[in-house]
Amino acid sequence: MIQQLAAILFGGNRNAVKELAEVFRVNAEASAERGHALDTAALSQFAAEFVARNQRTWWDSLVDGLNRLPRPAFTCGVFAVLIWTVRDPVFMSEVFTAWAIIPTPVWALITVIVTFFFGGRAQVKDFDFQRDVAGLMARTQAVMAQRDQPLPADDTAPPATTNQALLDWRAQTH
Image (cartoon, rainbow, N blue to C red; front, side):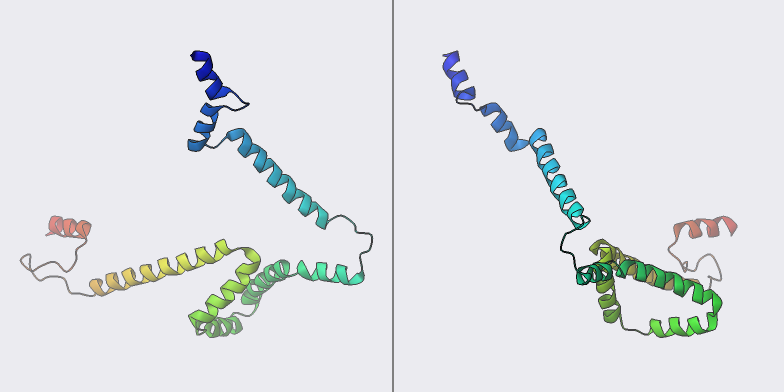
């Protein structure tokens, strides 16, 4: 009886317990083998780009060189703007003022084009940052509007703020 049960579970070059466990948990060894195969394929593809080809033409070299230009050109351009800002701040303030009136959809398009070279993650972070800045600006405007309200003349008037720390401080000082 036990031999029949063992033959059912482990016979025929299979392991029913292992197969059942793999339904709930990834086989770590098989996963590592797949990862190794993927890494090897990626590195082989990357290495193939840098292997000298026998029939390489001047056109191939030109296109390869042009493909490698956008990132360094963009980086050098950013540093040039920073240096130019120090050298001629009046002119650059005019440039930045002109950039400020560019509509948001155009900036979104520029962001998409630039992030094509630098990765989609930068675009997501940029839009999250814009959303956070917009929320911060709204909260700042609310605080500034609240700040401009006059203080109550006596302790019976309702406070002009909902800031608990400020209310506690006012209660201690009056």
